[in-house]
Length: 464
Length: 136
Image (tube, rainbow over all chains, first blue to last red; front, top):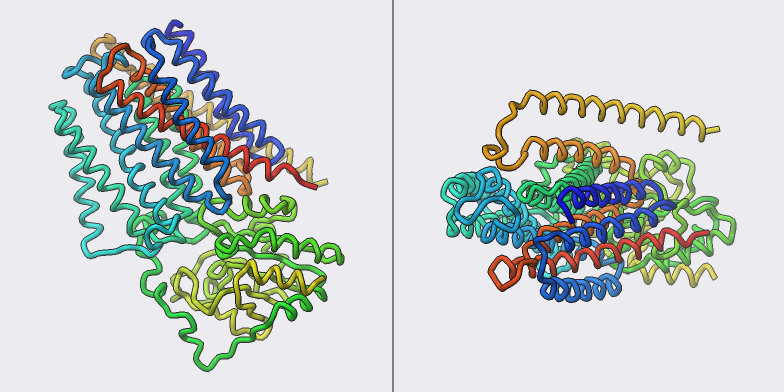
């Protein structure tokens, strides 16, 4: 296949990828979008296999069979609640693949027509170094994010003195190493650059806490795109450049949306350490003289049964307890009694963008009952019961009233406006931000202490 | 009643976006024109051309992704994850030559890693989207 013909097919593949993203603008078109994505990938791979440089196929077939089998197996087995760590793990693979391709291009540049060993074009060297650096940062960063999400290490931010200074020094060192690499083209410099990039990725994500993971995952998503684009520049491959740019901007937009959902700047999140002091607050601390009204599943069932409308506010706790199916059963019973049930999703609920929507969809909740913060926030005032399950900080009125609060300014769901607030929670422990939620002490709030799934099941029993 | 209005609004938005894109394209084309025609041997790779493609793709990505409904942000992540594995294209070329070399081994590893991602990413996305499908 001549270069022009393959460039043409790469263009078609690029358009397929754009259509794949375009399809996600609504649930009706999304599946067609995914098919476009798969088609684009097939076109890209077949086109590459037909280029004259590719003459030996056995290793390629072996790689695709092994990788494909592993990927298929994981994707079919994974639980939807484990989705964030799966995505983090996949990001790390893209990063590592970028590093491998950069290493291959460095050791055998002739395949890509970017010069000969020891005499690679300077601009290709810069692009190669950038692609490799970003890929390596994505790799170790994603591995750390995976470990935190999977619970292999604590989700608490890990901070130590001089952290930011070390990171800054490392970044400067990386720039110097890239310059040195471009001028000397030495293999030892390449290896050193790789090691430093790996270290930087690790150090960047370590100080960021569990509930900031939606931002981290989006950011790593973005990085994996930029790494692909960097490799695309190195190889002068427009398909890789276009795809990398699409993915990079997608991740960047998601990071921005997540940051806005917490009213924090991206720098604030990256610098990390959020929720360190307060996060350690002991359960029950600060209860003091104020009293909390707690109720049983039967009480909750009674209140729900007598309501005309209910808004459910799910959070990470629902995901941890796998309560989505029991919750939907409860909602079905209420709907049978003519009660209007809707769901309100905060942008940063869960551990990745859109996490709650997927879990509710998994439990067969119709998507037209699920609303975003802006769409539903006004309706709390005219709602009888707000049923908060596994969420905390995103409902805390301190975000509006207390300028000294760490979450001040964060957009929240106005559950306190509902006539009654039911809070399903395991204990009185404060949320991730380490801020106490004064809602717990209000007269119209009833706490339902217990595991989210068990509580829903008990309410279902009581309703029947 | 709301629908024609929102449609008109979207059409307006689209037109605005197209205008912005066209403007950008024009600027880039002009920049491109002002670049002196240096012999290819000196430039090596047509960097400005690649940069043009890159910047335009960022714009396309920006406009497409803002239209993605927030409910589908998780599938967006997994599908972008899958398509970023198009890096396999570079890996295939590395793994393609005859004989065994360091580059070929690296290419093989990268092909396998990217394949995990391609299959895994698209299948997980499909699983998620099917959940959003079976409704009513």
